Length: 154
Length: 131
Image (cartoon, chains in turn brown, green):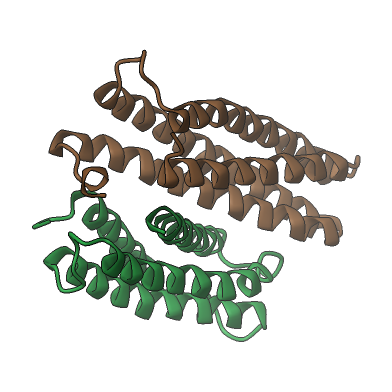
């Protein structure tokens, strides 16, 4: 067991950047989902305000934090692996990282369009609902990633 | 066992940070009425994440032979957990009150101290000073 718990000091900062970014992107997406779910039940100006809130949360916190998480991941990967001996859990991380980023990006665009339409009274609630589903799938991906990073299946 | 405990410990930490993110988002939005119901969600989930971090963290310290609950970095973590717990409970209770229409959002200082303690917790967990 001990070998799993020891790593070179030079890996600590990249690992910190990766984990901190992952935590913030999760927080931002969860906050956006909360606002979007509230928007489903809201009406009028409140609905538009909640959707705009979700859009801003994804744009100003979610996407930048995803980038920090991804840069941290590549940084720690470059220190830990050479590219030809990747264990399964690293593959799981790669398989999840880009799709989750794409989901967040699409959800951000949809909340922007939805908020604009809601503000002008031309609908837009459907877009916000699709964004909610996409963001929720992204969070499910994050949980799988956390499982892979902590249990490290070979 | 180690893998499961670590997964639950880290999952709890993510939940805790996610709820801090909700608190910050509500604060930065000015906690208007349309966002206030989020306080009802964040209150129990922050508690769940907070408890999971502590319980599974201490369990890990017993499960892993090279760690002891009285190691310096673990004691530091427990102190930081208490700080984030004290100020995080102020936040969660404060936003629950906002959701109930009683009072305004908690002070900026409570957000900063709770978040600072969690940031230091993460640093402590990664660097494990003295381990």
